[in-house]
Length: 216
Image 1 (cartoon, rainbow, N blue to C red):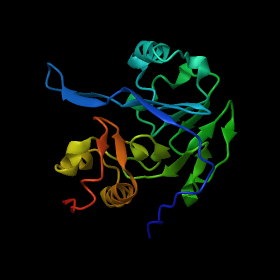
Image 2: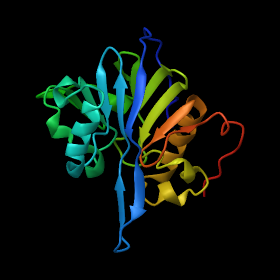
Image 3: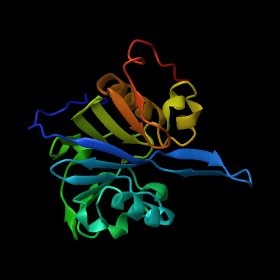
């Protein structure tokens, strides 16, 4: 049985979302699929990067941080929603941050946390929850309130893009376990006001909640 997602009541802190780079997927000149993940910055009591991009994004990430007056060493947490190279490749530059890679937590050595029992990991006003499906170890970042959106969920590749609501093959083709991923997708759709997907622009959910999403 899939657990019921719950969102713990914790002290509210003002929080700001900056999508440093929207994710994308496209074919190159050789007809091969290539992609770049969404790179997000959460600014509040802690500075949090979600999905720092590939090894080839490192210089870009440095530039994007500088636009917000930040450097790699100013970041308190780096969260990689799963272990794929396009999401974790620039992780090594954040040497002073706590690293959360899927369901593993590190700061020079492992930090114990039982994501497997669906126990949320709390950072300020953010809650990390285990949302497997794309891989066995996916996590999503739930931001309790970000003006003007409301509850924002940064999902990694649990959602590839808004278009995968109409074309399920966009997420199913890279799914580790489709029934599990579908279950968590539906749970997030019921809870979120705005979704930040792994490879597309952020999209509001209010207009989706009144319709039935069809999965094949």
